[in-house]
Image 1 (cartoon, helix red, strand yellow):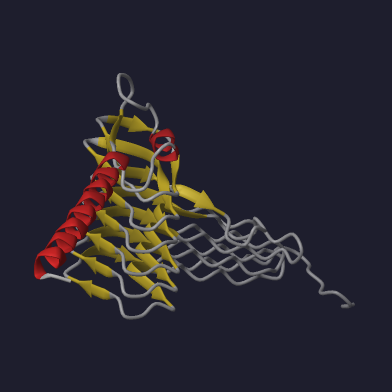
Image 2 (cartoon, rainbow, N blue to C red):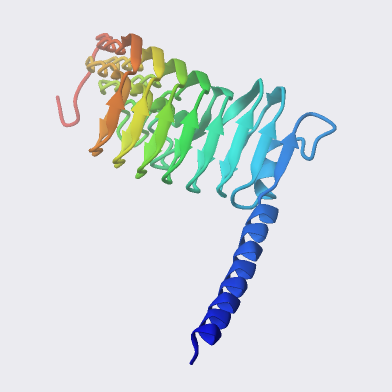
Length: 288
């Protein structure tokens, strides 16, 4: 085969490859779209509907307004807020999600053990996926729920965990430059006759469980409170529950995380619940 023929074949292959490369680039650009959310005059009026109708890589701009909703983020999108407030929270189950610029208050809640005895958790952003970017948000006024009385034993249930951002089995996230204020662990429930009061729940700015290799930096975390321990039962006095831990960042079974240059102010644990009072005659089972 002559050199000239080889050149022609090579040139033709290059042109074909370039053609298909342009198709791929064009396809990528047309599948990523930008939509807006606002109270009227935009593509959507709720953030959740915008997410449900989005494709991977889409940009969702949320304009000035207040949105009362708990948002499930199950697709890789960029959620970009301009002076918007979410009364509720985000549940991020997809990876490669960005949440930027929101004011988030009250949070979303769930009962981790399903019994209703221990207080429900409440968090601003729940992340159970990886490679997400969470930055420039303000998360405030998150209060976990109080425990209930265990009807089987009459001891007080543990208060729920309160957290601004909660990472569960999650890795390689960037959590940066967020402001997290006024987070409260749930109070323990009071014990009934002679039983122990429930322990107060953990209050934490950022909470990690089973999460590794995350970058957590430049966050401002303040006014974080552990829950109050529940009072002991009356009769033969029961002991009060232990106050919950207050933590800027709380880690359990989580390693290799880069935690640097965060600011912590006014982090306070919950108080011990009081012992019950002795009231009249009390006889234990089988006593005379």
